[in-house]
Length: 189
Image (cartoon, rainbow, N blue to C red; front, side, top):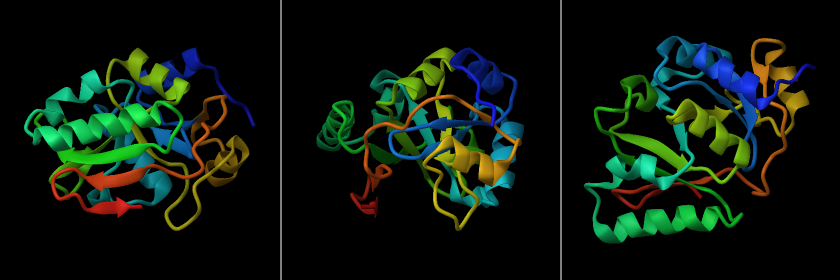
């Protein structure tokens, strides 16, 4: 199994290819969210319908601010606090936020919200920072199988169809909690 370094991973994203990378708890598949062909490659690899949507990662809260602008102040503060806690190596939070015109429709599928996580994983942060944008993040596994928890599992699932960024998983014992910011419904506890 051949892995690539951060510089090669950034090049991979910018070229419209799919990247497997470690996140807080499991391995993810990602791409530049503005490149629809790359996004469709992920859906094909995962055998995932476009209607389901995916998570977008950000390296900081500032990038997410436009999506928080219309939320109640109490909810907005709760979201920011959850991301600050996850920065202290607690379980990550993904929030379903109202969409805006900056988010491509293929990212959120049939939903009226987009899933956003401010990541505390250093490699994920560097990918976002280098791309100067969000990065698509969906678990590295075909539909119905368990998410990969090692680079070798990514290799087993996808052979040589994805580039694999060398790195280690974060300290989270489980994938992010997902909460709808508008309704308060917990989607994944």
